[in-house]
Length: 187
Image (cartoon, rainbow, N blue to C red; front, side, top):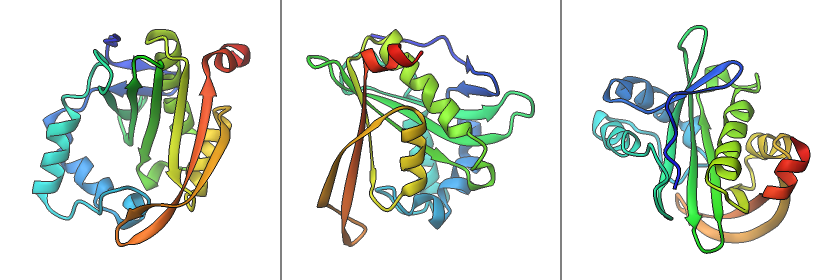
């Protein structure tokens, strides 16, 4: 079990719980086709979709049991600008496994913010929750996301051909992973 003392702070970022006041910003960045292109859902094109997302996101503040998800808003420490969100899912207690993910606001990409925020979630997973292995799964066409995982020191382990039917098409999935001992060796 891991209940973080929120907000979490990195060198440049604040990772905090979502609030109902985040509705407009979530609708903005998750409403963009270029942001949701490789996600399982389409753009949030109305307040109802964004509200349903916020209702889910505000509850994801701790990892109490396998199956739980920690989902945090990422903002700049200096300005409070909203950069996107990151998540850590506790996928297996028995095998001590987790999965990370992230969604970036396009106005703030290319500056290493996603890597910095995701690195903090790896720290939580390995050092806080005691996970043995954390994976990152992505649409194989999402090369920007693959670069983030590689910068985190994750290794590409699989390329699964047409294994998911997403938004009306068969898509390839790529899986990256990092072990706790690899995390500690790189620290």
